[in-house]
View 1 (cartoon, rainbow, N blue to C red):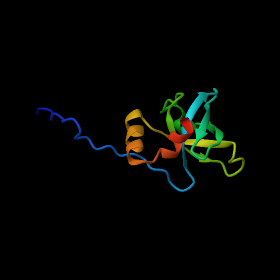
View 2 (cartoon, helix red, strand yellow):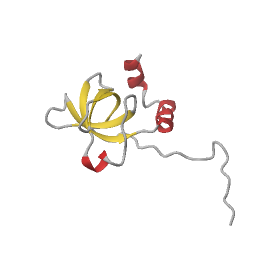
View 3 (spheres, one colour):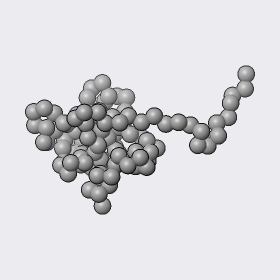
View 4 (tube, helix red, strand yellow):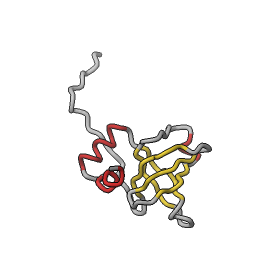
Length: 107
């Protein structure tokens, strides 16, 4: 059975959107030990922790767009990283207008 060739632009990308209490952020630097310094869309810098369930399955680098959930205690300074977007997914979010607050902070 022959493989079907995909045409450019035919592939549909599904992107995880933020749920209640979640924010977009950009990773500024990796701190080590599964932690990263993140600039969030609410103009605050938080220390983001990569949970153990995600630690081995994804690689987070400086400049990545991530979805975070601030902690209930110390939520102004700390958060959990819930999702990391690929470059293609981040471009789609920019086109849809989800990252406008984040872009104004970076420039």
